[in-house]
Length: 366
Image 1 (tube, helix red, strand yellow):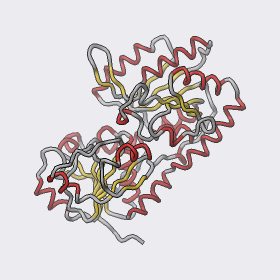
Image 2 (cartoon, one colour):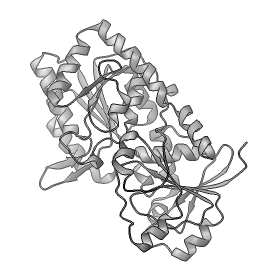
Image 3 (cartoon, helix red, strand yellow):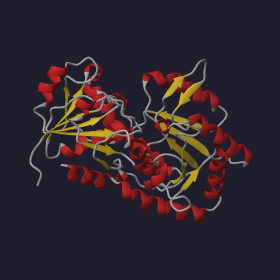
Image 4 (cartoon, helix red, strand yellow):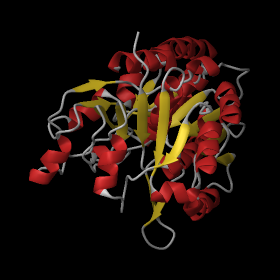
């Protein structure tokens, strides 16, 4: 039995409540059942407010953080090196979701989590000194590991993200295609946006699907987290789909999202389409697993971590271009028996990425 520990967890972008934050807060939730767990708030996060951050994560991801302490810590941009050395010394274990930056930690054991193909830029004497305090890296997928490990010369393990497959069940299916991914759009001038989840590509594919095949009874539902700065991007998506049955759900609650998963027939995902940069591809694909648990047939891009989740032609389909996305969708929705066969295999496949398996793997690290 593992002895009682004081554990610290730091994720610099906790306010975005994305997949990486779900990963880290699932660690916090699990370990807080038998250990003292502190989630660190840097100056930026502390200013936003711990209750606001906590409520957003619990609502979006269905995570219970009632036993977790959120505390202000001398960490992140502008913090004191010496204060941090003293502060961290009292911790038995520290988990850090790195954004590529590294700090020297005095906690007894230090574990980095890398969730995207980040290159190690800490190659000078000072960088090597800071890196020397970190003894293990957790990768969220084989894809991330393969794209990253040559740059980080540290012992590593793959711990797939936690997916609450037990909380998501198939419901009576409707003619719904669903996609879930953060509404994050960066303006590139005028009304043109770069968006990592490629929502516009999905809307364009949906237009082709319904208009060329007389499928006006189908609807496309797109859900995901959104920050205040994503308002214009959401407006742009709405304008581009005004003549279609396309519905947007920014910051939908986990309970409402579960219902959408349950009712949807098909799940679409397009992150990384048209990209060669591995950092802009889906590093794993939590929402794909969630959709599969609900009996949705996943038809997702053949890039990144998606290839580790979906077995092409068995538990879903992997597409290389929008034409294949449309063709595979037609193949599934035109044959009820074929849909049921793939749907059942998708549900079974999703169990490999359960939250229970994630917690078992975290326990092994202790």
